[in-house]
Length: 159
Image (cartoon, rainbow, N blue to C red; front, side):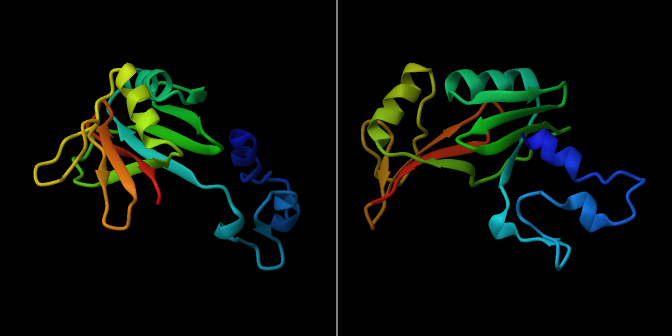
């Protein structure tokens, strides 16, 4: 579906009226010729060093469905959001979460991840339970884990 939309965004060189070329694309306001982001699908990006390793982790360990894969890109369906794993020369080391999931039962999710050999990270000075889940002052519960490239991912159960 997303590749069809992407192809639709590349107008036919023979079409002189751009609004005609873009008609029928969700989120397109033809009166102004701009896309209103509030009405557009989000695409998330994660930098990786190896498509093979990353695709295996995100599909096998996290259970996401691969919708497209090349030597340089892997697109996964994350509950209706396109998650694009993109090969970069050097994955930057970030000290924050790059993507996260809102889950209904954080303990069950943490245990399922553990069964798939994904351990929640432990952080010094953070009061985490036996599974590695931290409870925020407002009652939100969060667990963090890393992908094969060290990108920090999270699961959160909001209070």
